[in-house]
Every structure is written in C-alpha cells, then in structure tokens.
Length: 156
Image (cartoon, rainbow, N blue to C red; front, side, top):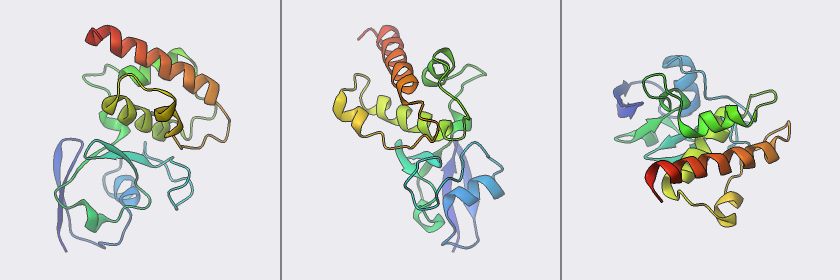
C-alpha cells in the first residue's frame, strides 16, 4: 500500500509496511531524530508530533493512517533559524534536565497554544506527557512565559 502524506511541509510517499508506527518512519527513514521513543504504548508522550495540527503520539499511529494527512515534527518548529516562542521559553526558563522528553513536551504545548492562546487549568490538565526528571514547575513557568509572549505579539 502506497501512503502519500505531508511531512514538515514536504510531500512524502511511503511504500512499505503499513503497520509500522510513524515514529519509526520518522527516525529510521526520514532521519528526523528529535521525536523520541519512550514507552511504545502512547503513555509517556516522548514521541509526540502534530497530525493535522493536533498533538498525537507517533508510536501508536500506523503508517496506513497517514494517507492525505499533515505531520509536523519538532524539527519544523523553528523558522529561518528563529526558535518557536515555546522553544525560546523552554530555554529561558531552563526547563530541560536530561532533555529526553522535551521535544514531545514542546510539541504538546505548541498544539495546546495553537488551539487556545489563553489556556486555563483545563488545558494544562490535558498535558499528559511524562517527565522522569520532574521538571513540571519549570515547564509551567515556560508555558506561562510563552503565553505572555504570544499574547503580546498578537495584541490579545
């Protein structure tokens, strides 16, 4: 089965095992290694990418499910070597400790803020990515910084 989809704004065609998880396509075929393997069952969120602008765990999404869809990875967030507001906030708040889960964390936050630039507790509770190092307080500060920056630049 040939699967045609968009990856980071470029059309891709895949003609292989349709049951293979997207995560392995990204890492092994596309050589995009920012998306990490964590648990393999969609629980930890280290493999989070955007599918049609929604945060999705790529370890549980089969290649056959990608037909006609748009995939965005952490590698596509920066534009012209300028970091995304959330990436910049992550650095400014010194969020990462080991850093392994951070790409998935950032992708989840970006999707949340793209759907609601003024998140409340409900949206924060919807962030279910796991950080083994427990940097959640710094993540919260980074998200709040990003929200302020987004709202300043958009005039909200």
